[in-house]
Image 1 (tube, helix red, strand yellow):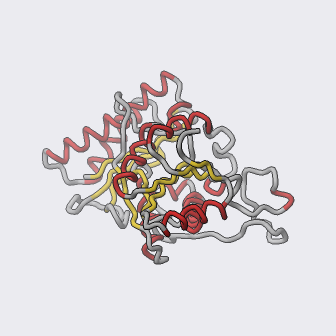
Image 2: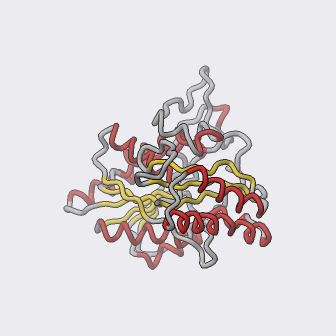
Amino acid sequence: MGNFEVIRDKAAMRHWTRSMKKDGDRVALVPTMGYLHEGHLSLVREAKARANRVVVSIYVNPGQFAPGEDLSVYPRDLENDLAKLEPMGVDAVFNPYDLYVRDQSDQDSGLIASDSNGSGHETWVRVERLEKPLCGVNRPMFFRGVATVVTKLFHIVEPDVAIFGKKDYQQFRVLCRMVRDLDFDIEMVGAPLLREQDGLAMSSRNVRLSAEERQKALSISLSLRAAEESVRKGERDASVLIQQVQKTITEAGGHIDYVEIAEQESLRPVITLNCPVVLAVAVRFGNVRLLDNVEI
């Protein structure tokens, strides 16, 4: 489909990139878990502005899902994803069968085996401090799965530049720190968060919201806009802003995982806004966990 190659094999993907680079091309990678929406396509456009060859990876990473999380119901639609990429000028789509070595007992599992007696995957990349706050409190294994699979993608695709959306703000900061600390020769680009027309942050999980839940979820973006306005009017007390956001979301029926204000790069919590910060939230409506943030 389209004018791009769909590559399933790791060695073939690496060979493709090296062939492009041999001809002097600059290669950009847009890592995704598929079920593409306009937010993903905006990352592709950013990639095309920064390189003359663009690879989009589509892989639902089992390493970042803990037992009981939503791996089995994570939305997938490869055919539609490829159709959306067709007019975008993408050069290759990397859609691997699996990026993990499984032991025999784990062949049919969505989880990565950690059995010390087995022969399955047991090597993980950790960004020890940045992975702990925010989403790391309730999802302690999440960022090791993200950092590990992105490391694998970087080794396989060998891009010059990688594009990530800032909706997953902590993820972007964790990966930037990983790239710095492990000396990857890759330019990291964080693209702005995109919203639906009604203000909801674009996410593949939005499709799982009922009509009622979606309407209630608009309280997230409304509360963030109100907090921004409070800052413009002079409010600098982080606790006041956090309570303001919490009240709006809770009154709409949201179950809050966290509402926090942190320094943008270190993700250290701030008491008074006297530096560039991010106001980040994670909220559940029904069974759907939604992330949103605003840089201030």
